[in-house]
Image (spheres, rainbow, N blue to C red):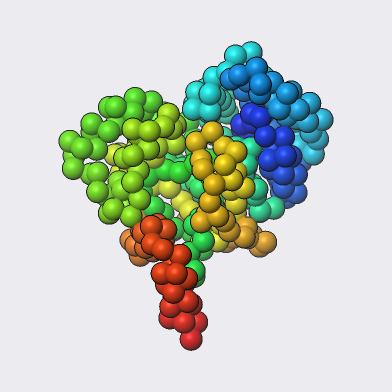
Length: 296
């Protein structure tokens, strides 16, 4: 099995980058994996010092089969950097595993990604593999499918990435035309449409591209990724601990399952996202209730 190259996108957060790399180095397949680091240039002169610190750090990275560093001379921005980097590696290798500089991984992340990429390589309904899962307080299947795509530790093939539509206005028009807005918003649990209007988000375009074509993404029942960047330091994220999770310390059993959306898990995700809108007291009550329902 040929291992997929790992694309890591970094910018101006040296501490986050170091955490991400240190945990990635602990992955069982790290020393057999080719790492490609895409470093964006500073947007403002005031960010030059932090970008320089990141670049000094990444030039000393070891522990992988190879490390290739691509430094931009101008600031492309996160969306353009990811689109160009993923396109480059998909074209060259036919597949890619994608991380940003604030994603801490389980030591079994690369194993899960590569095995799943291999199992579903020729199934056109599967557009990608994802490593993060919301901290839902109930037992989930080992792996399952949800419609669309995601962005916190993911992988795809060239055939999947070829379906990416960069035109957000076109995607939004199609969602409205096909009356899919409510479904796309997890039946009102989360306002994905709002992201189209407020941010230059490659992720929402990736998700919409997959969603409109009825493509599915494989998820783990226990998260293999934790996002440590939702602390106000990111380009597009505020500060919250709603998405914090403990990454799995054990490998997942990856086997071929029915390629259909798991409607029960989707309902649980909707419930989780809907609860984020509620006052903290209600969220605590709901978690206690679910605990008693599941374990007592």
